Amino acid sequence: MANLMFCYQCQEAAMGAGCSLTGVCGKKPELAKLQDLLIYAAKGLAAVSAEWIAEGNPVPGEAAKTVRRDLVMTAVNVNYDASAIRKQVTKTRRVKRELLEKLANREGLPEAALWDDGEAAYELMASSPKVSILTADSEDIIGLRELVIYGLKGISAYLEAAGENAPEDAETDTFLLQALAKTAGTGENFNELVNLVLKTGQYAYRAMERLDQANTARFGEPVITRINRVHGVKPGILIAGSDLGVAEEVLRQTAGTGIEVYAHGEMMTALTYPHFREYPHFVGSYGGAWWREKEDFDCFGGPVIVAGDAMVPPGASYETRLYTAGAAGFPGCRHLERRSDGSLDLTEVIEQAKNSPAPRDTAPSAASAVGGFGRKRMAALSDMILDDVRSQAIRGFLAVVGDDGRSAVRKYYTELAEKMPARAVILAAGSVKYRFEDLGLGDILGIQRLTDMGQSGDCYSLIQTAMNFKAGLNLEDINDLPFTWLVSWNDQRSIANLLALLYLGIKDIYLGPTMPAFITRNVMSVLENTFDLHETTEAERDLKEFFPEDGETRAKSVKPDITKDMLVSDIVRRYPDVVPTLLACGLNCLTCGASAFETLEEACQVHGIPVDEVLEAIQDDPMRD
Image (cartoon, rainbow, N blue to C red; front, top):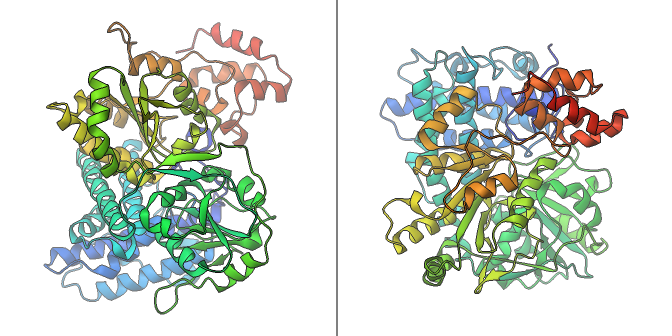
């Protein structure tokens, strides 16, 4: 048991319940437990900081910055380097110790605030029940507590991406420290945690606003841009992640060198900001969503920089040309350090790029994409769009926020876009857009049916657009808009987006493609009753709900039939009562990692079992819900 881990903070969690042997993301148990230790240390620092503030002192800036980095380094697909995590634990202990010595009163501090074992004891402490996320009175308390923490991780990710250019906001830093401190003790109250979840949404919205202010102040307001997705013949550098500041640094230092620079994944949004258009060697986007890194990075001939997040354990073919920046890290890959003037040392990257081959063709994609629909551009288009709404030329909007992932069940979003009514428009913020980027959805009277509003943090622009539409249509309630809100959750940024929408009172939100394991049935019941939060089902069925004909809607309680193209893990999660039937049919792979990616048909093929016989057995099962 000592070697086991437990993690369920992302959509890829094994069996939709949690990774215990190794992470589906590639995280090993030793690393997972060190990350849990870092969160434990962060809780201790937050508790000391909260007491420091309660004694009438200003927000301890170094403590807030340290806790933000702690939270981001433990988020999904960010840092796999155990030595970097250990180093951050040590730093967090130091900052806490220095602040603790200044406190007038230590009474009532949680155990995490007083923990100060040396580095030799890290592994032992990391395996302690004190550090495990499962130490709580009930699974509901655990789930709510983790929901708060994951929301705080999303907030921290947005603040890290904003960088030093973000406006000072002591109020957000205070909340971050106080909220994390509240998760450090025991005996949490269910209702108090529910309120804390909604409060986290308030500051998630505020963090997105700070990110928007920082980016637009530094890089200008995004402009509608046709983004090149065809690679050139010169050597290049590829930048992944979402930290626009790193992209600017790379462009500045490579100007005039003959090196071309490309964006991967959500970094594509950088190409829509006026400041980046000043660099002619920033030639376009290369590849697809973050989860395609192994394929795309292998085809890209030059060095690759992962800026802040979206790290997939690298393949051997490109590990020697992969660099990390910010909170990201992987053992064996070189981490780009800051010089004394704050700039990144890119000397090695640039030299390697000069001696690299040009990019090769990666997976087929459209030759270009259209982006840059920020809040200001959408405001300028609002009269034309709302005229189309009034005339029914545009029947409704799918507001899709959040991130993409590897799971096959995410084809839901592609099917949604393929089958949605011809008069519907998608407003997308986040890498989920890659699920329908290449469908050629066209336009409605000049309005793009896929309106790319940017990165996951640009959910702020989407919300602002909804508020502008509400005013333009003279509506009293934002929920009266012809909007359907979908949150494509993969990691903590998506959770922060969800909580922000709940804080704003937006209802009838659909969350998918599967439900987070940490949202228990009781917690989900509260969210359903208060906000009409729903789980996505199947694209065709959901579209009948989103765009009802003749006033008819399907009942919320209807669930999809089990079909051969459903993931095994999804079947087990949604229909646990059919597990004995599956086992009786010979499907003994229900708990292996492959179940997260295999459809029922694929699993049957592996075991030499006719899938039609399995489906018939399921239909005949009297225990089926």
